[in-house]
Image (tube, rainbow, N blue to C red; front, top):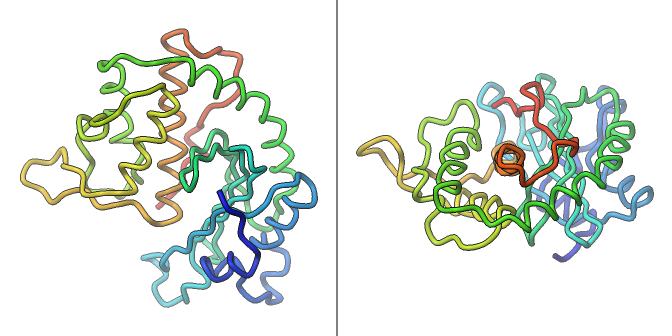
Length: 253
């Protein structure tokens, strides 16, 4: 995965480099987040995604909308920030696994934007050992077709935001897959990013691709959570691994 300069981040996600104003000076700044990840942890920017304005705030410019940035250590682990300059949106900071431009969020926390990111990043950094244990466990587990289909059914419901109208069939998410449990989570995220999946609703349009920052964050978080929880249930993942998604951590549309 190639690294991005701050200038390239700003070009891909203009809201990440929105001009500073007095009312924003104390809020989380996305480029400052990336620079801090570099200085403190040796992570470099690798992903930047700009969203469209929120439906309930269509009069604000895109530069104030939701956006997502990721910094990586170059070995498949990253810190992700889902941020917005719109006053009614929380920021989310997470610890993630990366495969090229695809992301699975293993741990995340919603953050009030005036509280900064440093403390939350320290919590994410403390979970990196758990992430490696979870990664190793999921890579060593090759689920049966029945288990894959059961996880796909959960992902079809949970990987889309609460306002989603259509959801893909589990069979369409499993189709073409061979590999371990971690590969499956990445596989499903790629399928959802590609879109044009058959819907569980009869005679409906195909399910569109997920592209917005909030949908990408949620899909990556829930895909990882579902395979991890199924692994715990089947005794393939230790219950001592402290990676769980709480309802309060979910992304709001």
